[in-house]
Each structure stands twice: as structure tokens, then as C-alpha cells.
Amino acid sequence: MNGRVQGVAARMMVRVSAHLTVAAALLVSGAWDAAYAQDRVAKSEDPQTQSAVADYNAGNLGAALNEFRQAAERGSRLAEFNYAMMLLNGEGTPVNVDEGKKWLRKAADANMSHAQYVYGKMYDDGEFVERDPVEAHRWFMKAAAQGHVQAELALANQFLDGRGTERDNRQAFVWYKKAAQGGDMTAQYVTGSFYERGGDGVDRNLNVARAYYAAAAAQGDPAARLKYQQLSAQLRDQKEVKPQ
Image 1 (cartoon, rainbow, N blue to C red):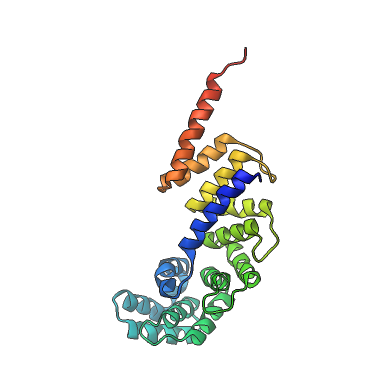
Image 2 (image 1 turned 135 degrees about the horizontal axis):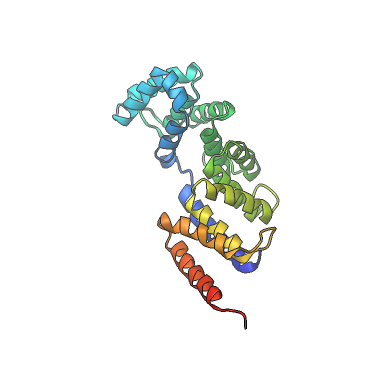
């Protein structure tokens, strides 16, 4: 990838890091809906977990905590994850980092992709644990292998930055494109940048680049909207210029 695209992607990484940082106060609020939707089958098979979610949403945190704990002890991975989040946030109970990490790891080991992503993010950010990008990479890879879009984006950033793994722009593109196809706005923009500039195994294709910029613009990215307009004008001018 040339310097200009590298700079674009690096600036986008700053945006991603700021948006996805797993701070203690945001663990539940940032992860709850995704975990709930992802594990809806487990939820439907476990009335107590379903009741716990309802109590949590109603603000009955003490009841929710107790119900999640009981369901987690029976092996519900959704309950394990949500119980962990409440312990780490101190919701319905004093903060208990050690216990929270234990239950989060249980959910991750049970192959819940969102738990794997959050567990990896803790190591990537150094929240509750010593920063370890290599360990983060391992968990991101597990979650991304299941199609977890945020994990795909995190992997792309790691490959681009050489954090937790060797720097590899080709692999970065692979994971940006997967995340873009999964609907992530930032990944759509960066994927468009790869196609616009070419290189690193990517054939330059302005039409494809414009399509990715359009997708990001449709989600409200002003920079992507500008790039879409610029490429549209460029392609129109090329079409109007006829060979002599």
C-alpha cells in the first residue's frame, strides 16, 4: 500500500480505537444488544436468562444479577457473559474484576464470539489486565472466524499496525473487506481506499472503490460521501473523454 493510503487507514484506525475502546463503564452498554441478539437461541431455551434480561432492562439489577448467576452456573453462555459484564461494571453489586474476568473467559471458552471479542479487547486495551496484543490477536481471530464484524475490524487494524502480529497489509485488506461486507462503516471506507489506490495484492478499481464509499456514506460518513462524489466525477470525466 502506498503512503497516502497508509495514512488514510492509520487515521481511520484512530477513529476505530476511540469508538471501540472497552472501558469499564461501557462494557454492558456497548455489548448488551449484540450479545442478546447473537445468542437468542440460547436465550429462548433458558427462561431464567430471558427473565434476567427482562429484569435488567427494567432496572431490577439485583434480581437480574442473581438470575444471571444461577443460569451461568448451569452453563448458559449468554448468562455467563452478561453476569461477567455486571460484575465488571458493578451493576447490582460492587465491582468484582476477578470474578467478572472468570465468567467472561468461561463464555469465551464456550465459543461465544462476542465474549471472545470483548475478552480480546480487554487485552488489546489493557483494561482489567496487562496489555497483551498477542493474546488479543488470538481471541480476535477466534471471534472473527465466526464472522464477528468488530473482531474482523480489530484484526484488520492489528495487521495494518503490526500490533500483536507481523505487519501485513494484504491480511489487513482481507479482514477490512470482511468487516465491510458485514456492514461496518469504517471498514467500508478503508476498503474503498484500498481499491482506489491499488497495491498489496489489490487491483485498482475505481468503480468498486466508489461502491464501498457509497455504502459508508449511506451510514453517515461525511468523508466517504466526499470520496464518493469525487470518484463519481472522475469516472464521469473518464467516460466523456473519447479516444482520438
